[in-house]
Figure 1 (cartoon, helix red, strand yellow):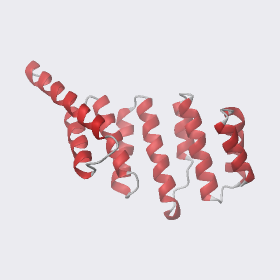
Figure 2 (tube, rainbow, N blue to C red):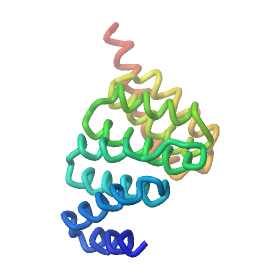
Figure 3 (tube, rainbow, N blue to C red):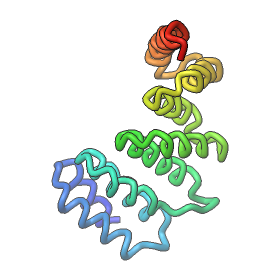
Figure 4 (cartoon, rainbow, N blue to C red):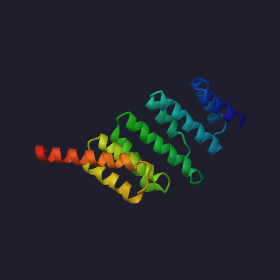
Length: 168
């Protein structure tokens, strides 16, 4: 516990080198402790994502332990891994991960729907993005991303009309 607290102090103070070293030590020493291990992997991924080192972020998120007792943290790591793939502009993989989250369990469905819509939009899959954002707004009418989703739907409608006019 002391090592985890130390790692968090380093992280909060933007001392990435020492934070990553402490998180790595946690993962080495406590591989049988799903909670410590998984949070260490997730926070390492956050540090790498902030540095725009998306490949290392993805590797970190993939280290989270998948088990029945750890579905929440595993789902959270998948959500962040999908975001990292989106940041890498690998929209197909991002979309696949968001869809896996939606199908697999009840954790983070709202967040995964929003991420899926974003990924589809960025991949110019406008029809799918329209359907996803519409589903998000129907299932979660008070979603945090309501305004963003509504704005994105307006842009999508405009893009679809432009595509229809151009005959593509």
